[in-house]
Image (cartoon, rainbow, N blue to C red; front, side, top):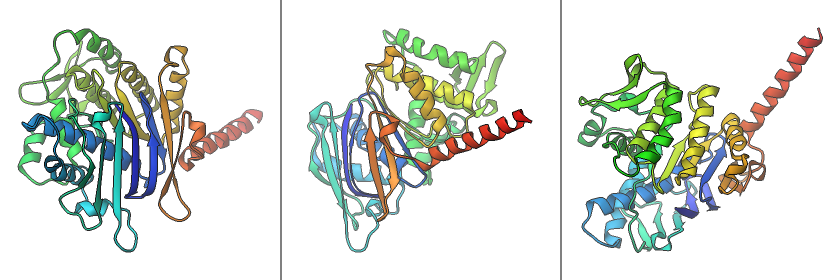
Length: 355
């Protein structure tokens, strides 16, 4: 479980130290303020450790393994031309420094790279053990409809899609979890399947379907909101989102109507209750308020939520405000615009009523 992130000269950030919540972390900001960059950075750090552990025979981490493979992961996830392009753009040479602390201090890592870096990072603090569970990254686009043959095409050809799409597709195609965890999985799946009106199935030809009482519907014919819920349901069913995993979700509300966003908010709460640490990036006031409404229930008071507000700085770059509630993160223009529009609409409505 992630505990703290420290960054210096990363993309739009001159420097920031984020104190991470144990359960839910909500990153809010305008477009271009680096919300997705924070998700991708943390995802890359965890994912590369889990990947090296799975593929390597090394029982403990080594610098030689981390130096190139962490650099490769960052490049494949962020998609810059070279690694050094992830350093903050200023005159002269700069160095990007990153440190991530975990509840298990044996996982702590610190690394850096310079503007001219291409294929390696410098490991300043080497973890003493591997992360044993792969994280999950949900991009703004659903992936069930493009799943057939996507992984094989991605690995056999150069595609400009970021590597999170491939990683998540691999998890979507995993076998269904069986055994003692099935009861817990069933509890998480039931509200999702009720909302979708059916269950997600993967056939032997590599195509996803929504199976309901009326039969099977090809996933591309299913509404996008249900496809997003379906992606979440599939990852729960395979065990990817069970038992102390980490979920990174970029704009869960993208392309969804209000009813679907409410379903997503409830699913996020269900996941953190089950033990998943969740990070979401959003600029949706509706999603933010829906989560806060749900979390106000007394049964969730023990859960720890942290809010992060990203703000364009007068001198350039982005500043981070953080705290235990949305009131601690300053005024976010996108959220203020939604509130202001609601006020204007209410004034118009009251004027019409008076007539």
